[in-house]
Amino acid sequence: MNRVAGKVAIVTGGARGIGRADALKLASEGARVIVADIDEAGGQAVAAEAPGIEFVRHDVRDEAAWQELVHATVTRHGRLDVLVNNAGVIHVGDPLTSERAETRHMFEVNVDGTMLGCKYAIPAMIDSGGGSIINMSSIASSSGLYFFAGYCATKGAIAAYTKVVAVYCAQNRLNIRCNSIHPGGIDTPMNTGLEREFAAKIAGMRLPANSPVSADAPKMRYGQPDDIAFAVVYLASDESRFTSGAEFYIENTSTITAAVVG
Ligand SMILES: NC(=O)c1ccc[n+]([C@@H]2O[C@H](COP(=O)([O-])OP(=O)(O)OC[C@H]3O[C@@H](n4cnc5c(N)ncnc54)[C@H](O)[C@@H]3O)[C@@H](O)[C@H]2O)c1
Image (cartoon, rainbow, N blue to C red; front, side, top):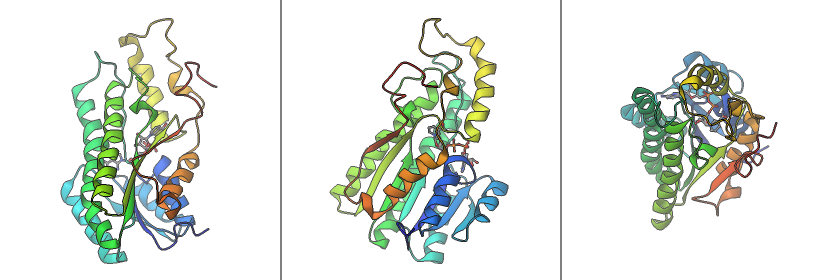
């Protein structure tokens, strides 16, 4: 019940999906949670679900907004212990069909958003005596899912940057951990939209008939948002105090077999 009692956590993209589950689980384990999202209605709804959650409208691409979010959090709650860089977007496209504007959108939200979060959370965590940063990567960081070409690149960048931050914090004795979580397919609104986009674009992409990748790929058996939230609680809590720079794959074998497990 109290695995993160007294901790103050920011969860980006917490208005729905995995971020919502992270926020609810952290709050149920005693944390004060700030859900930071561009979705005002969804964010307010999550805040109404538990007394320990509040919502702040926040675009992770906006550097000034990050300064304000961290400053307001510390002013209001006295500290910052946990940052979950969860906000993310996905677009479909292979190496020849990826659209530049969609790729830029993914890099700005997924990579810039994560880097800015680290940049402004670390000083606040130093002042708090330490902390934990949890970056939401994906199995896409290492699986060569070429129909999500740009998305894979952003998730690989997040995994690499997680190690940069982990080593920076360890070598400077900052008592701040940084780890990445790599979910497989999780049942969230992101995947509902993705299936539609995939269906619309698949005809224009090269997908060999004998490829283990098929039009059904996005429909592989999904996990639930809570499957990721349990790992977030572990990484946010002091239970993970000796864990930094690690990749947590939560994906029920999808990265070690060519077969889609349905
Ligand atoms: N669902 C999956 O199968 C899956 C698998 C692997 C990794 N992930 C990653 O997990 C994270 C959450 O995914 P999800 O499935 O819950 O997605 P989702 O689309 O259901 O929710 C994403 C949330 O991020 C918010 N968001 C988008 N752009 C934002 C911005 N600029 N600033 C602030 N918030 C913004 C959205 O409003 C939304 O509330 C993402 O980083 C995603 O890439 C998801």
